[in-house]
Length: 158
Image 1: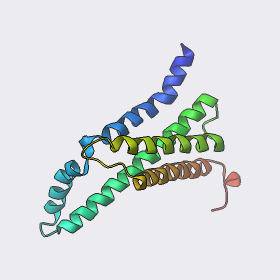
Image 2: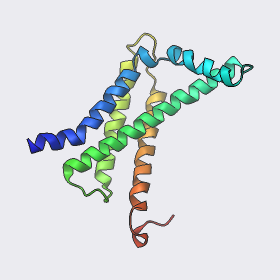
Image 3: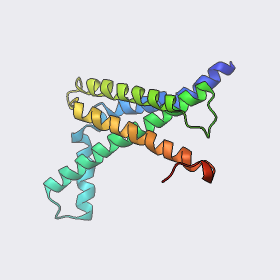
Image 4: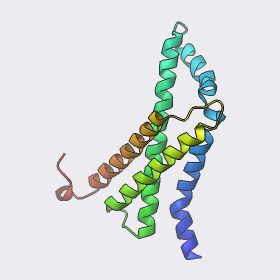
């Protein structure tokens, strides 16, 4: 029973986040759907905004979402791996980070493959690369946060 609760505590957030990413990869958050609320929202701020500006803003929001969702995924996977291995909370584990990146990268590739089967979506290698950059960013921020938590003499030089 203890093993199962330890596993759930570590991996349930990862699985829930992966399910959220999978749901976002369906028609639910396709470009045509997100444009229905991004365009009117921008027009509320600036009624004279051009269609080109709206499309550019929508593209930035959508690609930013890719970065954010995979940054969060990589941090959650790294946390789960560290919890399973019994690594103390204040310690950085390079191996867990590397495995977390590989899991997030693999999920990015399969997510884009999944999108290639959704009529309103396109699977894109460019998006997979953006996702991987997000995963790397999440782990870099986690690494930095871990070292900021260390006593002053143990921190790496800025």
